[in-house]
Structure formats: structure tokens, C-alpha cells
Image 1 (cartoon, one colour):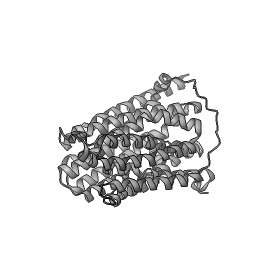
Image 2 (cartoon, one colour; image 1 turned 90 degrees about the vertical axis):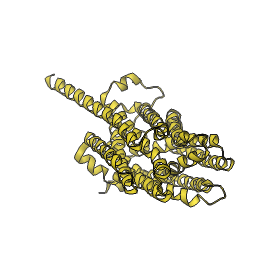
Image 3 (cartoon, helix red, strand yellow; image 1 turned 45 degrees about the horizontal axis):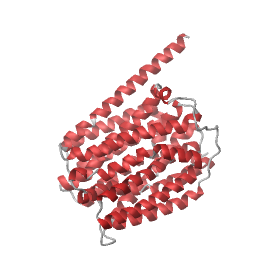
Image 4 (spheres, one colour; image 1 turned 30 degrees about the vertical axis):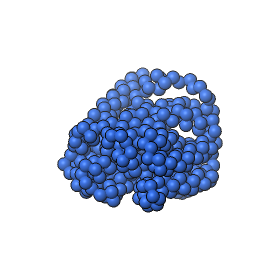
Length: 401
């Protein structure tokens, strides 16, 4: 029997396709945001502010979006925030028409809210299947991002000169893509609730954070996003403005990077069976270290391409590993709270990384930026070691008891 054809996995397929199409606006912003920012911002130092604000919006919206999902259900909440995404694209078009950097930044913040809701689809997918298939479900939704990886940047380039205002048509095409995603979402069937979820949970935040495995799940997500955001956000400016590579080459590198973020999802279930969750985390960290080595010595198009591909693969391993570990670190009735804590923490750190990338790339070299990525990597290694020590000690105490 093929598990991906069962009733629960039909939901996963719907979520994967819908999220991929709606999510295409995010890689579009990754490519266009800093380039528009460089043109509209009062200083080139603020060129990455639109992307940073999109990520900040993602972080700030975690708790409201999670509460909305809990109150309205996954499907209705997703429709609501997809509608917000369409409105945001319209505001982006107006901002470009008016050449308003402030309005464009507000638009980026709102798109971050839509992104928060789309990221919650991985939890909706995991809730649609049995717990032993949750990693597969999460991987499939993440794998759907391969569509967004190519559709988003293509929309950016196709719509760049669609009107007299550069990139205005890009956001028009993105709005149409989100509308198509919303129509596909109508096929989603909400799974039955397996356990009652109350507004107030019995487990405090402090208690959750005392669990080393819960901390490891969060740390994996933080490391995945901080390193990826710091490097990815600075890449378009570094490639196009500082190293003189063409917009087409820059687009190809960004597309390849985002594709590499999601392509491993197709084989991730097999890798998880062999390496387990913590082994996948170590593989992700190894990819990040290799990224730093390559980027430190090669700033050609091929050098940027290889480091950004490895960056994407490392992100995939770390993020899916953290997501897969999270459900086993708390009780079922604490899931919305745990998910909110996880996503708020991860995306807050990501916002800081994206905003600091614009500052860093104008003050230090590309190679020095990459060396700075060793800090979160080393922190992750320490937390992995701490969690392993705690689990070993707990196991030893239980065996004696």
C-alpha cells in the first residue's frame, strides 16, 4: 500500500500545492525586495529592510495566526491570510507607483503575516496523518516549495517590465497566483480532532523550555533560519551590486537555492529512517560548514551557486528535523502553544539575521559575513551535546531505578 495515496495524505497533497503557489510571493520578495530597497531606500544600508520586515512580520504574526487557526480552523484561517496576501500585493504595486519606501516596507510586513499562515500548513499536514508518518507529511509540504522556488522568481522577471513601473507587474502576477492557491485549498478536508484543545494549557512556558528536547527542536529551527537568512538576504546585493554578476545569474542562484531548500524533502523520509532526527541535524550543520568554506574562497557565479545550494540543503535538514522533533516534546493539548513558541522564537531570530545582513554587507566583506555564521552553528552543537547528555543521564537513572 502506498501511504501517500491514503485519505489523510490527500490533504497533504492539497496543502502542498496550495502552499507552494501562494508561497511563490516569498521567493519573489527575496529576489525583488532588496533590489527595490536599494533603489528606494534613503541609504543602501537599508536595502534589505523590506526582506527583514517581511521576516519580522512572520515572527510578530505567529501568536495571532496560531490563535486564529485555533478559533477558525486551519482552512478558514488560511483563506483569511491568503486574502491578506492578495491585498498586500496590491499595496506593493501602489508603493512602487508612488516610489514610497515606507509603504513598500509596510507591504513586506503584511506579506510576512501571510507567510506565517502558510508555514502553519506543515502542522496541518502532520495533523492529517498518523504520528509515524508526520515527518513524511511535513517533508511533502516542504517539498511543494520547489514550485514556489521557480514560480516566484519567474513571476518577478516576467512582470518586471509588464507596466511602466519596474516590478509592479510582478506583484500583480503574484496576487493571481495566491488567488489560484486559495481555490485549490477548497479541496482540503479538516481532519477530526484527536484530543480536546483548551484555550489555557496546563503546561507553563517555563516548563516547556526546561525540556532539553524542546529546546533542541527550537535551536534547530533557529540555526536553520538564521544562517540561511543571513547569507541568502545578502546574496542578491553581493552578487549583483558588489561583484557585478547579472540579474539573470542572480535570479538563477536564488532559484537554485530555494529549490535546494525543498528538493531534499522528497528523499527526507528515507534519510530520517537511516540517520534519525539528530543525525539529520548533524548533516545540516555539515552542509552549512561546507557552505562557509566554499563561499570563503570563491565569489564567481558557480561559487555563489554551489554555496547557496548547500545552504538550501542544510536548511532543509535542520528545519524538518526540528519540526519533526517538536510534537514529541509536549502534550497534545499544548500543541498550539508549543508551535507558537517555536515559530515566534525562530522567526524573531531570522528577522534579526535578515536585517543585520544589510548592515553587515556594507561594513564587512562577504567572507567575514560567512565566518560570522559559525556562531549559531557552534551554539547548535552545544545544545545538541547538552540534550544528548541529559537524555543519557535520564536513561541511566531509569535503568538503575
